[in-house]
Length: 168
Image (cartoon, rainbow, N blue to C red):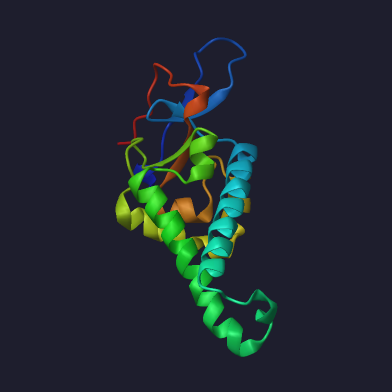
């Protein structure tokens, strides 16, 4: 779990009058809720497409999805793909396809890669969905899954600044 020492310090966008207080991780601003939402929506579409294509390849009959005995087998199958999808992309590339397209990256408090352990912690928190909503109200724009894993989502499209966050 993230500690207070893992939190970034607040830094202004340039010290000029009227400048907004923008939090930075590794020199990049934190991702905004709308951008994260759009990236997650795209990831959901990609994940559903992958699952549908896999189901077709294995000839799984979705018309039986509501039958209880069929659901016992299919739900773990879909959860397995979701866990693999998110954990592997966050671990290896630092972002899922949706986040990559929107210029977002999942990083640790120094702006570095999150590693396998943090990727798995984030992944197991996703089914709660509360985490994503929490990010819209949090001062560090972290969801519950980000807080549990000690991760942040940065927006690389908005550019690297000369100031960097120090978390000591």
